[in-house]
Image (cartoon, rainbow, N blue to C red):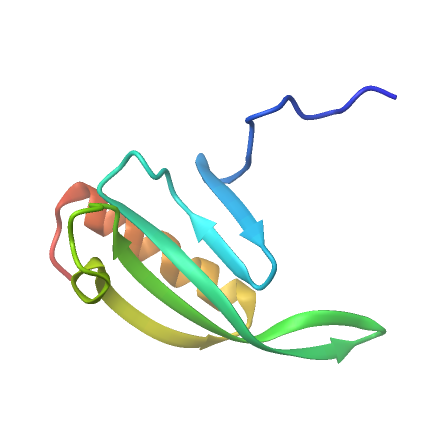
Length: 101
């Protein structure tokens, strides 16, 4: 059975890599100055499916020489993965373009 995805390829959202490991989702390219980390804090069941309820969104600098506290640029908690992805894309786009707020 052939794999539909080649090794080393990631799912993408709006042209940027989207990688999930357990209850953590990383959005963005680690080679760029910023990425988004989303942590699923709680889940709920809807029609027999478990979906994300509370999601923490964090804009993080990818500079390995910064302390973990200084890597964290922004943080927020959203209700649901849709709202979390929406704010994550806005924050990442602004951070990578150098725009303030």
